[in-house]
Image 1 (cartoon, helix red, strand yellow):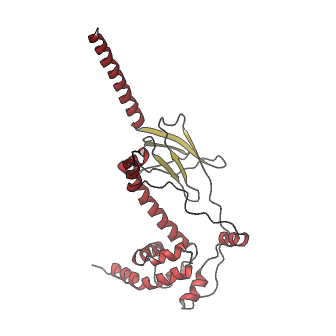
Image 2 (cartoon, one colour):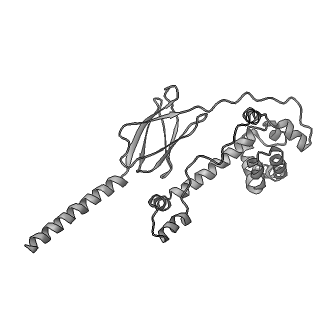
Image 3 (cartoon, helix red, strand yellow):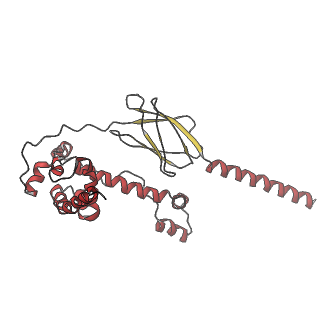
Length: 271
């Protein structure tokens, strides 16, 4: 009788074991996410960049707005297109029951820039005021007293200390452990650094005419490169950008111009 009971017990545990293995494989198995991307009026959007932030895989939507990308459960998908707000989606454990429908909202167009007719004077402080473009959005916000958002609405990457502390106290942050082991946290930090850099470069480009840089010998196609170079060799410039201090940022970039221009000359010298 005990032998039969033992066999039944072993058989039951085997069933439970195989059931757990099946559930584990199903949960962590890679799947293909398909869907359609449209704007807020229902028009299909082509050439939208779809990024799996966990695997760094990139695909693009076709002329019908359709896309297909491989992903694991809990992977974050990011949808990017110029002149549209970014969209995020997290793959659920059981996948999407139907094709994913993504709607992207156009970024509101800014009021046309005010062109400055005056010529540069050679004085940095004066020229920075002449070159700076009026940000109509900031003017309106200051006039009506609109509150400024605190920080950025984006997922915070997992930190080693924040994950280890609950373990020492007898808890376990499963998602945090997964993010660290899979490399998601590291990729998030890298992507955020890149996004912040591009945002700061765009902030300067949107407020300073190209002539301000080209008149000293910086080609128009290298303006963004020069701004990034200035950020790297003189980090204080980005502090001014974050504080929205254009004059301070331009003053710092003025100091980096000679070295950058000298490097350009050396690149042009034939070997």
